[in-house]
Amino acid sequence: MRMNLALVGLAGVVLSLSGCDSGPQELIVGKWKAGQGGIKVTAEFARDGTAKLTMFGQMLQGTYKLEGDELEWTLNGKTTKNKVKVTATELEVTAGGGSTIIYKRE
Image (tube, rainbow, N blue to C red; front, side, top):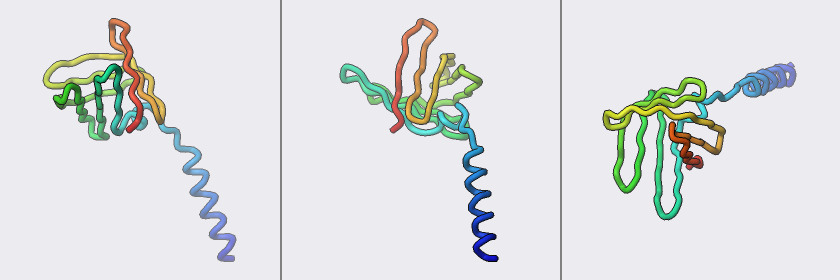
């Protein structure tokens, strides 16, 4: 009887975890890094909608909003909108002019 209950409980946990689909809103949360030619950039997104961007040793703080494939972030009072693609390990941010930065999860 205990074995059956344990198996049912385990099956429920497995099914609930397999049903969890991490969408972009959850995937973007965390710390990301990018760098080319000696320039290092880090971006950090928190669940509460706050963001930090560090480049050239300077940290910019603000907020972000992710809707579909559009990232709107306001850092030090300046708001920008970018197209994004986010996976568990990579964040691709494309500016309006077409330049793309690819971040790796830190």
